[in-house]
Amino acid sequence: MIDQSEPGCNRTGTVPGHPLLLLCLLALLLHAPGLFVPGYMGEEGRRVLLARGMLQDGNWLVPHLAGEPYLTKPPLYPWLIALLGALHGSIVPWLARLPAFTATLGTALLLLGLGRRLDHPRAGWLAALGWMLVPAAAEKAVLAETDQVLVFAVLLSSAGLLGALPGNGRRITLAAVGLALGLLVKGPPALIFFLALWAALAWRGEERLLSARATLLALTLGLLPLLAWSLAVLSFQEGAGQG
Image (cartoon, rainbow, N blue to C red; front, side, top):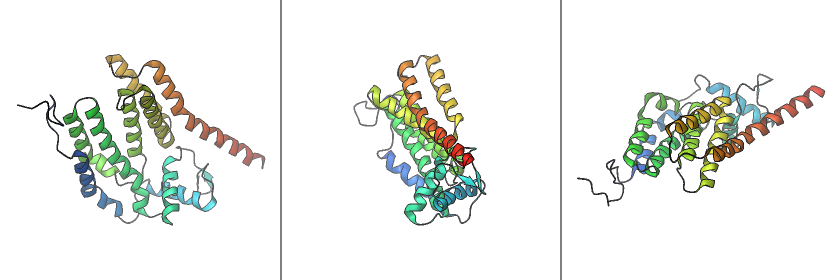
């Protein structure tokens, strides 16, 4: 019989004594070696070329590929690679993959925290463990691609919508930051995920869900960074055209 008074226990069962430490160790054992695989695979080369172009020409606003503006996706991931490259002195494979690896671990820690906040610590632990072990996540965790950052951003928004932090203002901020990250790394799909999640939770009548007014505020705040970047790109292109 489970003692409800013990830390980490409730009706959902028990969790390991140090789940955060265990998740970090699991990430290092399973994923970290893949960071140091030489060369680039798939879409990695494109992200790296965009980042190198930013460092070479100093134009961080509009990424270029083969001399042409690359606006297929917003530039958050190339920004991250370029920033890390500037700090390190050069762009190498492990550094280019570091944002994806960090987002993978961050997603696991968010699942763990969300489970505890919603009074289901065992469910949170199992979700985090499952995320770390699922083959697709393990593969993407060590690729310089946008998928893992998008997952982290969507879950961050979910944590805000579902009340992972006390206080309405903090929840709005969390939801807005997650949406902004998703929009800057992947574009409109992040907005679709955000709206679909809110609609699904509202349909279920989830008591912890942010109100429509608070969600609208989070939506507005989350859209502002992408809007600012889009307007800056338009101004840059108009100036380039006139020049």
